[in-house]
Image (cartoon, rainbow, N blue to C red; front, side, top):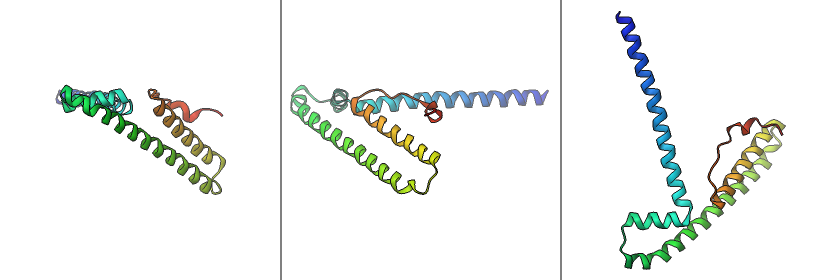
Length: 139
């Protein structure tokens, strides 16, 4: 009788852990997605900052152009960062290619293409899509 009760308690505990982990993961992904979107789109960025600072109408009129200019500068730096990162990855692939097999280089090429697509999506403001099966796509 005690063994059956213990097994039921352990099973209940494990189910609770799994459900809690799944729920927490969902909640965190949703929050991160909203934060990420908030800082990539100019209107959302401006609205969020004005709302969080709780500025008056007079202040808003003054700082709104400053926020817009700041966002443009952030966007430009981010774009330059991705361009530099892509160039660095291409250089790395050229250096390492003489030491790798074709299938190993194919992995690096796919990784670089994913990085480029991610940059293109973000610069256009398109939402992210998950393509987990991409790794096994026949060429």
